[in-house]
Length: 139
Length: 45
Image (cartoon, rainbow over all chains, first blue to last red; front, side, top):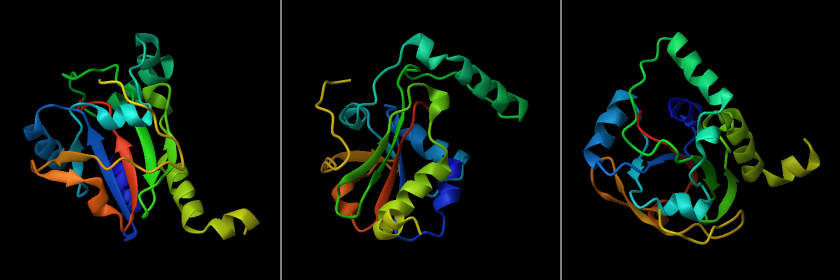
């Protein structure tokens, strides 16, 4: 989430929005402060948006794939303190771009937690939507 | 999670109203002047 904030900082035509499904709204503000986020942090307690975008629950094998374990090990090695999750750990995430006309333009549905798209890929996709002619011509 | 149809690229984004970090309603159609990069997080660990 910090990467999202940092990548789109200074791009006034982009609003990053982080959605979670926690039922405890009071945790959202604390979590936002902890990560020093300045973007909206929203609660989708019924997981309505997750369902509409096709972000389902993964199997245990998907969620705890070797890549996921390696990802968490890397975070620990870098000093990140991880807390046990109190929510559904099998819920998979997603990333999406909505254009200013309110249309879904891109969606990424990673099959495991470690397969989220790099933020640079989302930025590249966004640039292509901003400048479709330039993308088509390869310039 | 309740069952829904799944939308795809090119479809209108649903005009949902969620609750933000201040406990206030946050409606997607109120923020249509910009591109939205929507990150669906897994959990708050």
